[in-house]
Image 1 (tube, protein in one colour):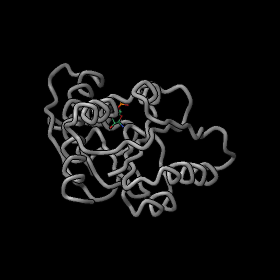
Image 2 (cartoon, protein in one colour):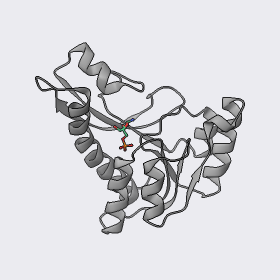
Image 3 (cartoon, helix red, strand yellow):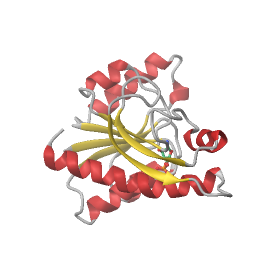
Image 4 (cartoon, protein in one colour):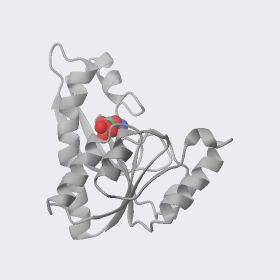
Amino acid sequence: MRIVVLVSGTGSNLQAVLDAVRDGQLDVEIAAVGSDRPGTYGVERAADAGYPTFVVNFRDYPARADWNRALTREVASYAPDLVLSSGFMRIVDEEFINSFNGRYLNTHPALLPSFPGAHGVRDALAYGVKITGCTVHWADAGVDTGPILAQAAVEVLDGDTEETLHERIKVQERRLLLETLDRLSREGL
Ligand code: GRF
């Protein structure tokens, strides 16, 4: 199973994938790692591990559709079976998703369909829920929508901040992501 990973930030989920592949615990081929902005730590981690990287900078394109087309072309050039959004903070359009037969996997730090969007952890905390968690799902062109593959619950503790809660969620998110990728690689997409 060939994958392209898209990141916008620090890429700690990506690092878990890189480590699992290196240690022979996950049988996927990382074709490339790309970002929507220059200078991400995620891309740096991938380059350090020796993988091809690319940036399709959102700010370089006059319209979202142009950026989408450029991203689609770049990702398609690596012929992935699956594209993984690992903290990729941009919405892609249907053309992108159809180009990869809908095999666009996303992780989200909340129990979807609750708290979609860029601030899932902050929003759950502000609402006052006692249980939140993370979701791995096939992403469609909506905001954190699409068929759910796996979820894990995380308790909200008294005194949690967005940062402390997100760190505990990310532990589960990494586990769930690795389990899901492993299952997909063994059982087929
Ligand atoms: C993850 O919690 C992801 O679900 C969210 O942002 C975080 C990305 O973290 N959208 P990292 O870049 O993998 O460290």
